[in-house]
Amino acid sequence: MPHELIVKTAALPVKATGALVVYVAEDAEPTGGAAAVWQATGLDWTKLAAASGFKGKQGQLLDLLAPPNVEAQRLLVLGSGKPSNGSSPSAWADRGGSLASKLMGLKVTRAAVLLDDDAATPERVGELAAGLTLRHYRFDRYKSAKKDDTDNSLAVTLHVASRAAADKAIADRMAVANGQILARDLVHEPPNVLGTTEFMERASELTELGLEVEVLDGAAMEELGMGALLAVAQGSDRPPYLVIMSWKGGKDGDAPLAFVGKGVVFDTGGISLKQGAGMEDMKGDMGGAAAVIGLMQALATRKAAVNAVGVIGLVENMPSSNAYRPGDILKAMSGTTIEVVNTDAEGRLVLADALWYTQGRFKPRAMINLATLTGAIGVALGNDHAGLFSNNDELAGKLLAAGLATGEKVWRMPLGPAYDKLIESRFADIKNSGGRPAGSITAAQFLLRFVNDVPWAHLDIAGVALGSPQTETNGAWASGFGVTLLDRLVRDNYEGK
Image (cartoon, rainbow, N blue to C red; front, side, top):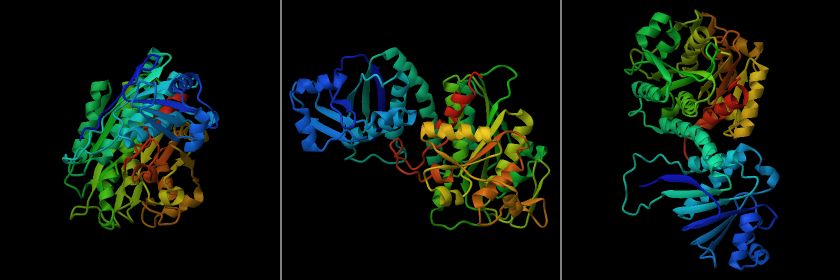
């Protein structure tokens, strides 16, 4: 079924052939171009707004079919809410998402949007375009076409005061939105289609954008002593990989930012087998690695002025006669010995070697890992915030600010010696699970053992990456969480610095 979105800009005045969209603020009358359009209709705004109950609240809709004296099939008046609520980038992305939702719900195929307000800066128009794109997204490539399928394609023209500036801002922001869509696509792919090799190949395609991509196979990792990551992979016929993606957009010799992702392409739990109900969702246990790939694509596409490295550990966790077992003692690349008490606490084993390798080889200025690591973080924070754990207050503060700006919110969780004691082992240096109490915290304490003194943050995205809540910018199962957040972190704090 066709599901294409085309977003372009045009100069003023508006020429609409389908739907014409104008915005009106809360408890206000139309102003600027919206006022001119409304005056052309000859209708009484006060009476019509009162009769329809239109207050101009965010997302509220007033729909006029065949409006008089207006060259459009319908006139859509959308509420933009209180002016003070529209200053953040996420507010304008939400506005674009709400617009896409309204247009799709009304089965509009062509729309012209009037954005002549002073508040519609090029950057905000870029955010609106991104919101449109993200909300319009569907993953339906495996659905067969039906006779009664309708064309869900949508062409939107944004009429702006400064077209050249808007086009530049849209291209810049769409680089990130497309990175987020790539992350969503990867998470949505079925596990029989996207295994470790296929995932590695998707990452390798980024060389076309100027990224350097290096792949370590099982033999190379064994030579490096990555006993923790390789143990998780040994129960599957699919080979493990460590993929390193490098973007060199900053100054020569500058230490890079490092982003590390958990890439468990399917997680049965191994010998500690998960319950059958809902196990199909474990195709998304590589959401952290998907976000890292999406971020690296975004940085390369928009030619970010920063040095960055993305590292993903790709494995499949399966039960078999070769699978690792509860009671096994592993030796990580760092030399740390790990008692396995639960083979379903596998992501931290993958990250242990990936983090140690990254901090040792690249000496990054900061290192951030993303992982769908624990169900416990969803119990603690629900689906509205990702869990943030960090050994550095400054880095944590930057991530919190980036989350508020983008709507990909994070909440800082504690670390400390009391939690570290919960992963002490009777037979090895540490064990890979501290049990149910403080499960997400003890998982973070485990990772902390493998970062040395590098400023580090761990984002547990299990509650926000999969089975995501429906938001203004996301109507899909997978959100692609982390791409926009980390791009904003780079823009605001590290790019060109």
